[in-house]
Length: 530
Image 1 (cartoon, one colour):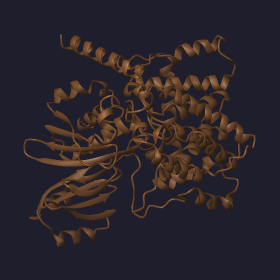
Image 2 (image 1 turned 90 degrees about the vertical axis):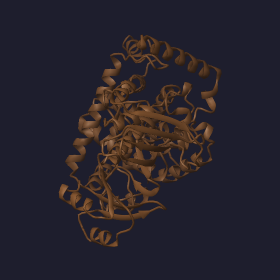
Image 3 (image 1 turned 60 degrees about the vertical axis):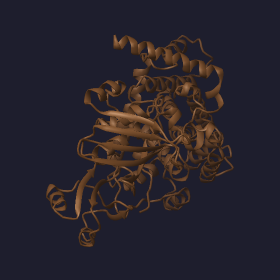
Image 4 (image 1 turned 180 degrees about the vertical axis):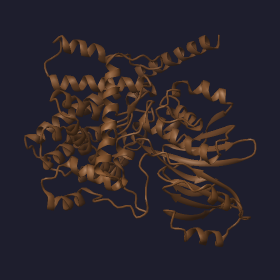
């Protein structure tokens, strides 16, 4: 089945708390699916991280443990209890052990879980693919592919049962019926848009060949469907689609794409986008009031920037300064475990909203105009998601802040009344200027140089937008720049891709910050225990 990215699944979202969408939100979604696999009954979890990936050095500081625990406890990605996950899992009586084992993981963000209760056990292997997206790849040693966009009914067999498989294959209520097996387990996987009825589940459990039936609930807001169709799946196809309607803007095309992708009306997708924009605006407003969180390396700085800006004590440049203010505020909300929209990721959550909403407020744009701008950004993100990646673990910070800059540039041109051609040119120029950006976080925290790179990305978006509005030549079409981005990511050494093993991450200053954080955590732990 062909998979097409969704703006609300893959590009803008999830609404979440935590430092990193590919760590915090993705691991929470994996934990939620693990909880369903165990029928909400977990007593012990062993988590294996491969040293050849990124998680050994980042799982604690970037929120993998936080998210995974929250998922195992059944929480949502924006649950207010996430900062206190250690206390909550202890109250629940669940023991979680983390091990570092070289088991040949092919993906840098691989989670291998052994799950146990008093009377059952299962194993699960899953990966985080960037921006909060996941894929469960193995259950009890049996290959599967589950991305959290279906109700996944798993029928565990004692052997094989061709009669049962044949009956289910003829049932048109399922989007897909798959049979897979390993040396010690056979599995029928039913994929559907609705949860199976209790009657059906009871009938399945009555088969002598069936040892167990589990339903894993979807964790994504937009579900997949059989014979999924979209109006276009590439830049070239979008150009063809638009030929008969040349007045159509990039934002309109983005809304049409998501409407058909989700199988809902244009009014519904616009309403959903409005909700996301209001969440972004609220995050910025709360951040500007000042944020507080002990376990971080940057204090709240945006309120002072706002004061200096209002007092005329900064170099003039109202729009750019407003963008810096909004980017900083959003990043500080993320670092203080506040609610943010991962757009396209949590690590780059400031660039796109800061750029588009900063310009929107400066130009006093309406909500409808903001929605159009975000859909223009969103469809650019769809092409990046399908042609490259949003995961810094795969392609460095160009996958996150670089993508945010490209998306933001298209959105700003939309706000400026630019043409479709200018929107595409702006997205191309901004991404061209981002290739090769490393991800080398200080003290393994998604704070610095993340803040500066988000500000740079938003500034890049504004500059590229204005150049496009002035008809600067982008020279390389967006689709070719995305192809180049994928190639550059493949060539980048893993030390510069969110592993904490190179660049600024290994400077003496970074190591000193790491030591200070450790001392602070130890003091806080002692105070708490007393």
